Length: 339
Image (cartoon, rainbow, N blue to C red; front, side):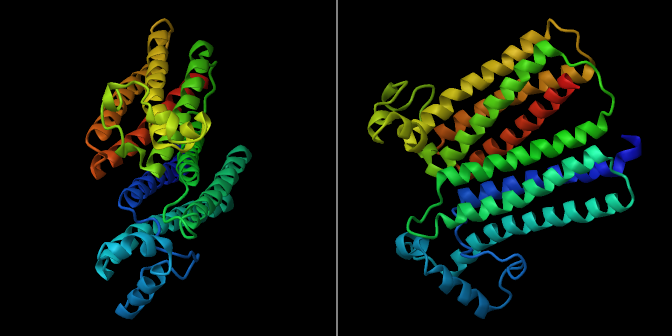
């Protein structure tokens, strides 16, 4: 790390910005601000409207789309209200632009100064492609809510959210490769469990996106059972025409999967922890495993309270951000068990 400190700080700053972007994205979703900007330009909408006339023009353009025509027109929706939702969507996109600048300019500098080896250069090109694709996914998601239905596709939202998590995870992994350049034998018995736990966590994140996209946290606000004291509520099977659709498009079914799969994630983290007790781990590896147990229980508790309190903004946001922290700990632990 000593010889590549600036590269590490560069990659970790990218991780921090991705964290901030997901946080702002969560606020954007929870405040229903995501459809306030009805087009996308790389340069011309870098800053919000700067005059009253331009604000009126933007508001009039917004009125042409389903969210206003089907929902907000009935809510005494004013220009002041529009400015509020516009800010969060604009800020979300603005951070995306900052991430692009923070990545590309130092990358070019490090290339010129030959501070990156060939392996790291390849990984950085992958990151560049991932960042560009993430921007496309954001617009692809927004576009789905500008046609007929005044809400974005929950499939596209989950894809956009999950890919942000994956981009963050890969950026962190690349940074860890530089921080820990030495190669040691993997702890095979734990590495496999950690890999499975990571996959399960990503699946849970995908379903978190489904829950957010369908507003599925606003139904069955009970725990440990769903409404009417039922573990598997009857509404799950009648909301959609097939069980597959119920588990991917129905609010009850999606919430059931997300709340039940949480137990599976916790179980895998606990399995990793107890298995680690039988292995000879170094101090950093032990800390990684212990952090997973602490964070996964905090995340579980946040999920429960988010449901019980009907998804208040601060709890919904905290639940999403701790998922980010949990993924960070998972990636760190897997890296330390693998190399």
